[in-house]
Length: 62
Image (tube, rainbow, N blue to C red; front, side, top):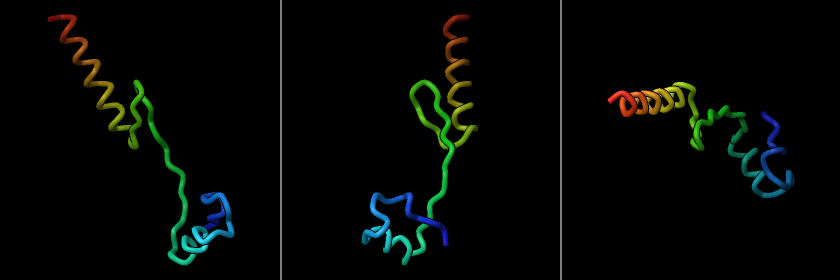
C-alpha cells in the first residue's frame, strides 16, 4: 500500500488510519496555468488560449 504519511499533518491521526483502512492513496497531479486559470489537461489550456487568441484577432482585424 502507498505511503500516506505525507497527505495528513499527523501520520498517527484517525484521518491517516481511515485513509489506510479505506485504501485511499495519494497521487501527484500536473496543472497547467494560463492567465490566472488552472487546467487539469494541456488540451483544455491550449483550447482556452487559442480561443482568446482567435477572439483578439477577430477584434483587431474586424
